[in-house]
Amino acid sequence: MPGEAIDSGVQTGGSSGGPWPHPGRTRVIAVANQKGGVGKTTTSVNIAAALSMNGQRVLVVDLDPQGNASTALATEHRGDIPDVYQVLVDDLPMADIVKEVPDMPGLYCAPATIDLAGAEIELVSLVAREARLRRALTAYGAVDLDFIIIDCPPSLGLLTVNALVAADEVMIPIQCEYYALEGLGQLLRNVDLIKAHLNPTLSLSTIVLTMYDGRTRLASQVADEVRAHFGDTVLNTVIPRSVRLSEAPSYGQSVMTYDPGSSGAMAYLDAAREIAFRSTPA
Image (cartoon, rainbow, N blue to C red; front, side, top):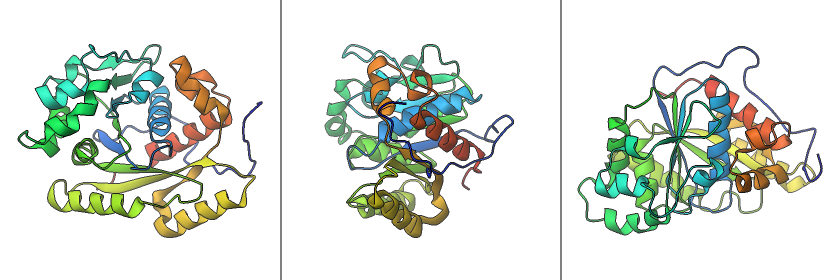
């Protein structure tokens, strides 16, 4: 496909054939990395879409004020649309903002508007400010969900803290480029602090290698370094650089529906399969 960076050495993984297993309970996964441009939103949206296309019921919570996940899932997020901001700050029930994604049965989105940019400041004075998203998700019983995927902003502020307190698992996208591991130590320290003080069930369950260009030695060196550090936490599947991944959101779609035959779509399908077949962390 023109413009695709396709490499025959890109690894894929997971079980093949047959229906994907439903988890015994809802798996809540925060997709976090304070570095911008590493593929957090792309990963959140396409993993969610691939899971839903294989029989899972999935809610994407857009916790980034830029609202890019909402855009990619064709979910309205103008300033006057009820969004995650009202849920966190005004105690609006989550059920009042969740919308089913058009033409994607079983996939839902809780949108973010630009109002969410002010939530960091307004949350400071609220009671139990770190646990407001967890409380909202616990009270949300409109559908029987298999996965809740929280797309975090590129920061380690109160929005990301809310995501980590609400989640059972952390998924970290790491781009296969220079300085890939820069800042990762601070994120991991935050995860450990939150596990120690606010959410003892939190675990780093998944690392996804993104923006892999098989034509460069650097990409394979970074991938090897990340695997040496984190072992089996790293998915076997790597996500290649792909023009289609960049194009899909401008059409209000995930790459899974925009171009399902592209290298990016096939990689995210394999990554989602791996996640689905991995047992839920204790």
